[in-house]
Image (cartoon, rainbow, N blue to C red):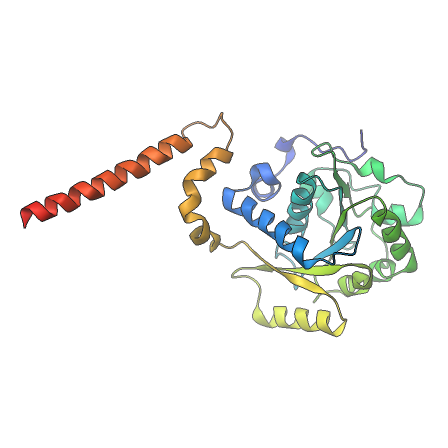
Length: 275
């Protein structure tokens, strides 16, 4: 059993529990993460055995860590061996969000190279590993861009299919740019009605000037997905637990739709008779 065994889900805060992991996400959010997974399979270089994906944002509070957690989860859920690394060495949050020990972690692994990656295996999925930040170092940017970091990633790439790296915001510190030379590409997280245009523009300019391969952007905290999945709403009941109370089954949803159609037909016929 790994040292970072996930605690009971009841230890999660209510806010975190609604945003993290497949079982707690809404139907629409789950499908969007799966869509992100599918898009990455077409976007990432095909000649790489292991893809290293950085996840960042322009400023704090845009949901990059939650996105990194859920992305790594859906990748592992499909059967790929996935490692999530918390490389936000200034204000790490993955360990807290997941209810696991913060040490040993990345910084400890960089110093003590004989630590086995197996101790970071989760009890949620057999193929999902989480490497927390570890002890906070005095020089995060230099450490992430160092030869030791490159050597560590080369070693880890031999053991995993995907490595997802949660990185600090681009506009605040240079950490994400420092490690960018070691990764396959970067995902930029944007939060609807929160991210300012000028901040995002500056972030993208910084990544461009550093020749970072930007894979795309993820819009977080948006309600726009409802319009795309509205017609599939009744099918979301199929994905919910059988023990849920007070929620209609898929068959009930079909009956409701049928009843609505009959009512509409009856009203139309009555209108014709009245004429």
